Length: 348
Image 1 (cartoon, helix red, strand yellow):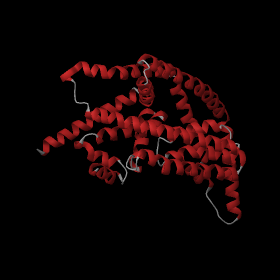
Image 2 (tube, helix red, strand yellow):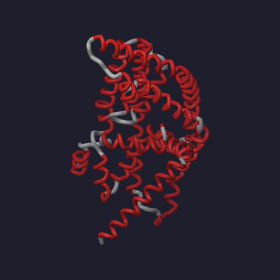
Image 3 (cartoon, rainbow, N blue to C red):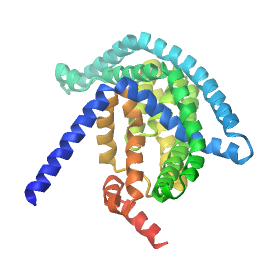
Image 4 (cartoon, rainbow, N blue to C red):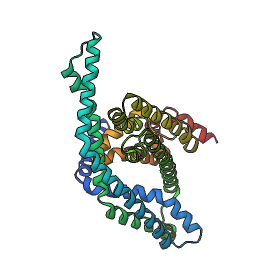
């Protein structure tokens, strides 16, 4: 029995390694389809609403497609120009950050605090954060280059989603049980819809605050705040560091502190008050799982994988929740309060 279990463990581990290696090899093909799948899931509620109000499925898909096309043209054109401009100015920003760091070290030295400049710049170089922001924006720009493929896939997924109930009825008694599948789809739709709207408001408020302060590329940093709000706990830190450093270089320490305070207030309100009110306290992932998923999916899929890491892991968690046999795994992935919330739900 022990030998059989050990053999099963090693076979499962080998299958997992093969699947991960295949996903990493197919990154260029997998990323557009994952983005299309998430867009299709987010677009399903408005399409369902249109169909419920006597709009034909084809017309509903056409309306959603036109809206997505207009949004992609506006965002793509602006983001492409902003990314190009920011990338051109990135070396200048890095040099300014290094010079500011050198000035602060001289101030510390004048007060009798001697710091090893060489080791400090190797271990803590603020310009690396700006370089990381440039790589993330570049990766997002490459993903948006496949806009036609993404939109075409979204159209096909929405059409298939509209036709799926009819196909299910045609199966009759041979149709598989839909209880777990329906619960899973509803949970994913609810999570991504609420998370998307909260993230959108977070991005808009962040862009407005940075624009008031006079920080360059305010709309671009608002887009980054929108995307990284899908990554709880540490996403706000990743999204806030580049604009705060840019405010420091461009406007000085006061503006940098104001930018950091604005990010803190916005995310405290949206992440700790608004989002739990609509989504529920027990929905989420533990901080360790968020960090590990960020590293794992970022390693497999690149910068876009970092943005999709938490939604992908959250979908896995929601799938595990729907089955009693795997709910213990969902509890392990969830926050500390998840077990209590599920217990309350079962009691109700």
